[in-house]
Image (cartoon, rainbow, N blue to C red; front, top):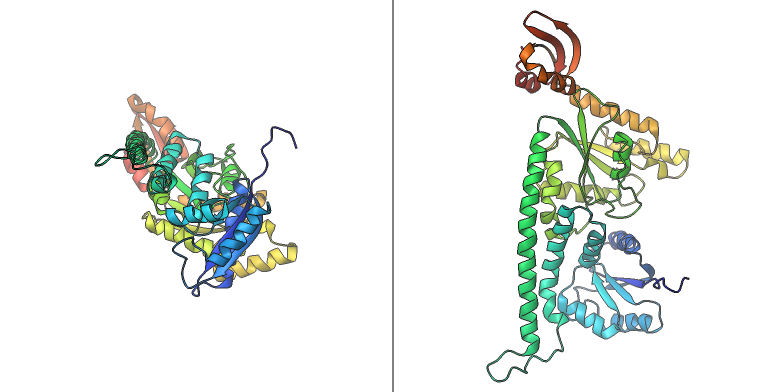
Length: 420
């Protein structure tokens, strides 16, 4: 290893399994936490579970399990503990103090990934607001042990004053970022308003379901693609290619995950507005993931939470190419189609599948087209580009006072252009 390369941090995963949680569910959740750790660049060296009625109020797990974790840290097996739940600031501090390891709960892990992957000003501001809100109640725990009594009788100690100063800085920074987001959201609203009359499909789904790969295949755009959780945090909007008439816009959105921190959902509502304002949602599901049914349910819950459950939805089972051999893929695809007859089963990496999906989108957005004639006076020929962008032009002829177009288009497009 190069002498300047920092050593890989080693993490052990822990989870309390309560009586109402099945073994399969806890196994799925820990497998997902393992992938989150991998996305952070951590090496997972072990997994620990403890069956308990409830979380231990002091350190999340009981004293026996704390001793086991301390031994793992002492012998160099791990230096980080990842907790598969959200825990309180005091539980995190007590566990750190008892084991000597860095402790991150599930929310902290997700926030760190979001922080690393946020690229646009909007995403960075949204993530920082949530991180600061997460940090605020933890300031007192982080400052524990400082001298808080040196201010004399009736005065504030140095530690307490420092705590208040930190809190004020957090409040001021959150206010500053909130104002910045309001300004950026105004720009986004203007951009969305310009696209209001266009056909739009939003790709939604669990994180790492293949949305960005499908986006690239459908539009030819160089969107970022990686086999990591939350590789995409920023909404990207591109035109479907080959282009259709009317033109169809495709938008990629941030992925969902089980127990996504509520503040993150709220923070990303402006980003997810692309889903809310779309004409069609293409709900992608990783068909190769054993836990795909739970992932499907999580996405449906988040869509309901943001108010997008009324938008027409097309279920797309992606990554079928990752399911075993050809025979296994065929059996799995047949089972999916039998249970969800209207769903598409495909791989975003297979050209014929992408073409079939393209045709499905085109059919959806052209199903309500009607024929009409548009008479455009010669002094309004600036509308010509709009006609060719938003309509299928079947015929064009010149008359003395106008250009006449026979078109197929949506009724509202024809009305907007003054057609008959």
